[in-house]
Image (cartoon, rainbow, N blue to C red):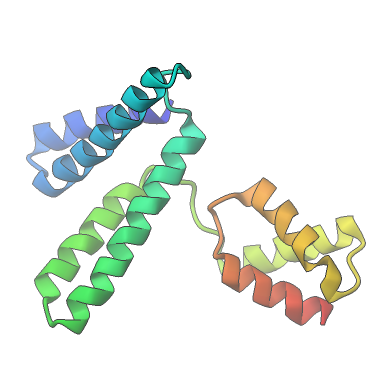
Length: 151
């Protein structure tokens, strides 16, 4: 389970003295605890599913990427570097991103399987990609590849 991996990584970070990783992982676990608490209050399952944890991690990464842009615009480069370090910690718990070649192959496979022939089929192709590779690719890049192929 993903939560257990995060907890184990926090223990290792504490043992090795990796303050950045420990602080980042404590934030993740605090967010998970909050979600579980809210779920209990609403009468839902208390444990957060791995897919929800992955979504939380992606959201945290997106926040940090936005912070990096703001820090760089304000010439706060040390803060931007800290945000990059936190992103590296968070990305260890996500499936690897598809590189351009693998994304292109995934797009071709989805188009072939669906029999997609025009731009009207773009949404269907994207839906298949999301189902198979959720969070592992850049949606804008995939859409550009699909449009170039079908357009």
